[in-house]
Image 1 (cartoon, rainbow, N blue to C red):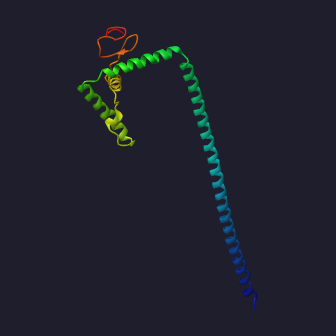
Image 2 (image 1 turned 180 degrees about the vertical axis):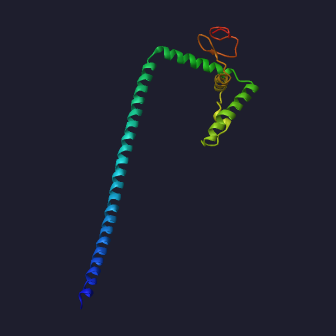
Length: 183
């Protein structure tokens, strides 16, 4: 064998060794990449979970604080005798409204308002198929309040006020006899 024939053999061996090393390196890089991906994914998930938990705890504390503040305010207001008297006057006035039914045109106007403004809005946002009969107050007092306060605000008309309660249709307040046009 000559020297020329021996030379190609080490090159072939070098190529095999280089190829084997390259394949080994690629496998190692792929394996480390996969391990890093899963480790980073796990770290990100746990970090996200921790962040969401802290946001939820912050919101819960905010709700608890607001509720405690509201309960304190309600307790302070409820202790006031003026509030009790005002509530009694309101209940008395509301009960009086039960004897004032709406006429047919007013009732039709209220039903039209509910159909166009309330029912259509609820149905459009997908809160279920509801009807006017399900939402409109069943009592005369409830309908009276809805007609004169909700619909009155739609036209820009403001209710007229007397010392004790709001007067819209009557010529004077039943309690204080203040004329309707007086403020």
